[in-house]
Length: 336
Image (cartoon, rainbow, N blue to C red):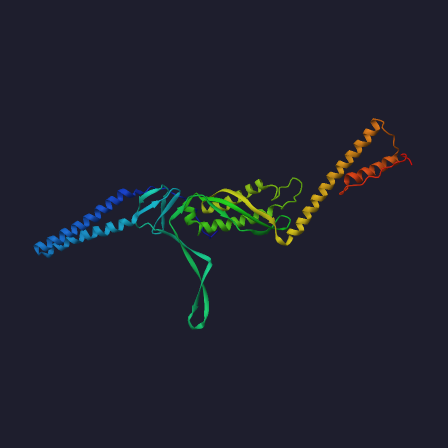
């Protein structure tokens, strides 16, 4: 029997808040009514000199206190912004419509406090002279942006499929889709997006070779669309837990690591030279073959095998040489 409890996944519930302007008008009436009642009660006591009328102050003071508390229920939402409603730790729903609204003033305005781990404060402990690093906590409000956001990762140094160290970076366009998951299923959804995005980029880089794959094998350099699609799919699987939807993911930087960049550059140059030589030789052989066939078909001159070999050698030297060749003209007979 499994004793570990299964964690429930939060689900967003969209609710409607009360119109803020109507509640503001109501709260102002309560406030003015309480003030008017207090003034009237004090005036009555002053005229009659009867302290029994002082009990009338109790409901009016309570009315003033109620109006003051209700004032804290007002809030505004901009377009593509939402607010999660939390009452004494319980999730009550999400308001997504922009405008001026009013809700229960006891709804929390602070969602959570998350630690900012890279930031530390050194505190000296009295006479012992020892410093203790404390973690700074960042307060997250109940308002969550629904706008599209960009995350441009740093240049990550990873190994590709063949073990070559490379540098890779990507940009991820994302937005919050489920506010309940973003608020309650992860500690800090923005930090979660950054960390999981870098992990996905590292994993994708290890699945492909940089630029030299097997036959019909996709590579990071040549198959950018396929790599981007794979990265986007993996990111969506990782960020689904935080209620985040990935709209686009693209590589922005791809290069060999500095320690092997020069060697790989020389390899690429050598491959380019070999490919160029192959093309030059193929073209030269085709031209020599065409020249021999033209001479034979038009009966310009009859050549034996030895003369054909000499002619082929001379033509290949002329066509394949990197520098200009200087011809030597034979003024005698062909067989001299």
